[in-house]
Image (cartoon, rainbow, N blue to C red; front, side, top):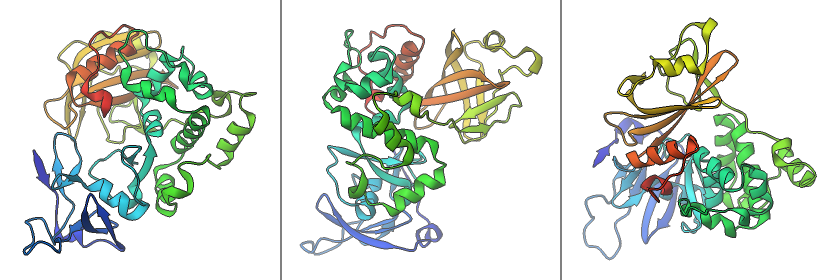
Length: 350
């Protein structure tokens, strides 16, 4: 299912235009994420989508904007950040909004960097390396999947230690920057200048110089970005949309995850915001973390896993979303420390 987002006002709000060729098609590309596909010289007449400025149509199954069968964000990244082998690199949306294809919101990443920036994948790597990410950084071949349920990350065994260290250094530095800073770097640096070389920031440089005398974890830790929620005792981690948490305890004198658990039951509304409500599917308290599996009635990724922790007198909520229910089931199962026997799921590859 596709949705059209074009409007004359938005299409006309731009400052730069570039041209690129992607999969045999010639495109003009604006810095606001709009594209115009040119009519091939061999064609006597333009095709329906030729010679028209468009942001593309939203594929409601994937969330990406498309022109024909081509993804607009790859076309924009190719025009403004250079052409690259899409079997080795992927285009990342910095703000995670797949409809925001402004050139400064896009960057090319290696597969490893893209994987490390996914918090669930990051935790799986830690788990498969005995709970210590530094073991992976030192020796990526340490990945072990005796149960055979994490084969989608086994390709990481083949990267070199240097590649792992460089990718981890960049990802950790990106995580410490405000969104505007990350956008600025992406806008001014071509991918060729830095993606395959060690990150030269002060933090990353210290990591590489001190390693292995100091572990990466000792040198730098990613900062956590907190946002206010609509519930006075709740905060949101890397979760920008103001959200209400109806089941979150409000008594500041009795803040405990056990109290939160006592308010939960399957089918209750656990989050509410301008985009809809999420309902409890399952939950479990493990040590100092409460895991809640949820679903919503609609949306591109209607299933989620919410992790709740207590920090400085607030219930801190961090969410991960999934396209399919078995994705949320798998990562909920892994998060609570149980074995997943369902094999690969669609969300493993997203």
